[in-house]
Length: 316
Ligand SMILES: Nc1ncnc2c1ncn2[C@@H]1O[C@H](COP(=O)(O)OP(=O)(O)O)[C@@H](O)[C@H]1O
Ligand SMILES: N[C@@H](CCOP(=O)(O)O)C(=O)O
Image (cartoon, rainbow, N blue to C red; front, top):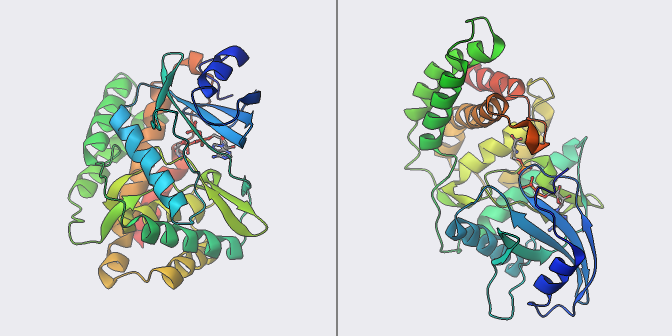
C-alpha cells in the first residue's frame, strides 16, 4: 500500500491539465513502494506515473533527482523522462505535497534473477555511470556518514532501556565499532559522479531479458561510483539471510566491468565500501523498525540480512 496522500480523480484531472498531455483519462493507485505516493495515469500522451513526495523532502534535492532521471532518458538510457508543466517546471504541488509526472517504463523487477540477469544488471549500472557523467548538478549523499552517525545515535537512544541480549539492542551495540571503521574510510581518490544509490532489484525493471527501466532515483546523489556498485552488489548478490552468492557476485561484477572496467583502487576498496554500504542499509532498516509509526501502513524491512553482509565483507 503506497498511497499515503489520497488524490481524487477531479484533483488529478486539474493537476494534469497544467501539462501538455492531452488530459487525464484514468487514474489508479500503485500498491508497490514504501516511501512515496504513486498513481498510474492514462493521458492523451500515454501512460504516466504521478508521484507525490512524502516526508517533506527538499525541493532542490527532488530537482536533482528528477533532473538526473531526465538526463539519463535524454542519453537513451532506460530511465523515465520527466514531464514539464506548461510553465516548464518538473516539480509541481498537489494536495500539500511536491509532485511530478514521469513516463511509465515497461517491465518488472526480478524476484529470482539468473546469472545472466546479474550480468545484465551490472552492465546497466555501469552504463548509468557513464551516461550520467556529464550531468553537472550535484547533491551530497543524504545517507552518507553524517546520516549514519545520527541514525545510530537514535537507535542507541531507542534501545537504551532494553536488555543487552535483546536482538535490537545487541545489533545496536555491535554497530558502534563497525560505524567507527566505516567513518575511517577514505574515498577521495575514487572516481565520483552522479549515482543511483538505491540500485535494488525492485528499482531495475526487466523486459525480455533486458533492462527496460531504472526507476526511483530519489536517493540519487553525487558519490564514488564504486560506492554505488558496492550497494548494488549488496542488493543483488546475497541471499535472503545475508549469505553471499558467489556466482551472482562474479556475474554482476563481470557485467559492470565489460562496460566500465574498474580501476585497481576501486577493486581494492570494494570490501570496505561493501561493509559500509551494508551498514548504511542496516542502520536505516533498524532505525525504521525502532521508530516505526503503525499508522504508516508499511512493514519495516528486516535489518538482519544486511547486518550479516557486513561480516561477510569484513571477513573477505
Ligand atoms: N516510471 C515508472 N514506470 C513504471 N512503474 C513505475 C515507475 N515509477 C514507479 N513505478 C512503480 O511504482 C512502484 C513504486 O515506485 P518507487 O519509486 O519504487 O516508490 P517508493 O520510492 O515509494 O518505494 C514501483 O515498484 C513500480 O511498480
Ligand atoms: N532499498 C532500501 C529501501 C528503499 O526503498 P525503495 O522502495 O525506495 O527502493 C532497502 O531495501 O532498505
